[in-house]
Image (cartoon, rainbow, N blue to C red; front, side):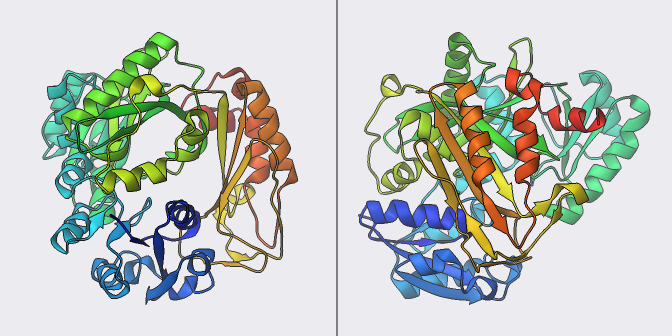
Length: 448
């Protein structure tokens, strides 16, 4: 039985995991950098251990310090949250060698799915629809151009490792290909230390639809419906919702079955997310699998009533899923807005600083996941997301109205935020009507 969990993360996800552990009667250990000495997660956990200076490269990304903190505290499990080391196969392997339960999939599965090319080939073998593209790494621009001609333009050049929109370039024509390839490859080398590239057909105006899956070690795998994550800026999600207006019951069933098939093909155990691109025609393609809990997991929790963090812990503890696919029903509509400390009017420039006044809304159907408080100083070293505002209502129009009302109540003084920008998106007639795709914000920007 897991008795004490070390959370190898910070911010709102660390607080979220601590609360889930409390409800399960499990002790918690927080780790923190010197910049996070006064962070909320250090105050809520049963124990807190400093693991280094402010930069994440000297603290949250140092495996040996996190393992040492786990051993010193007597914790028998580690929850990595999202970001940092959550999808690092070497870290998961480190935990396995030290007999520490890693609350997530096995290291070999993370390694296999973390490499986009290998993940793609796994899905092809399993019969999961994938975007037409190269099956092997592309060594240079000349060979890439030949493959691009076979696939058909436009194409997208992608780094085999990494994420977050880095190491990706679109080539609309053969004339653009060489420059797109070389630019993406250089960025991949700088960002991930690996120049391995592959090429796919570029799907125009798709929706980004992801399916949450849970799988235990007894061969039981289920999906918990979809999240529509099409509202993005520079490949970074801003607003997520469940369910998606784009999915009919039949398409939801088809995509859900493909997601389960994908997870089983990978030998997956724990919580994970299968990401698809969905064309307006209803055709969908596997994009990637995230081997961790997602930022947007609360919308799934609200429409299914299932606590994903608790399920992660139970699965890691060797327990069977207590429900089957037939038990899962999507109820109502949930929307999440990511609140970031940034200034949209100045190119989304990060806005660290001290929060001088704070008011967060509450009431039926409103949830806030955050680690900020009045007097808290947001450090400049980490991601700019400081809170997630999630609402639930019986249908999408009501959920949109509730979200706008809740956003209008938020007061965060002392820093800039993207709250007004989120409000504008929710008020856009096309968003209200559900006419969205992953290029929605870019198109909106171009329209002025």
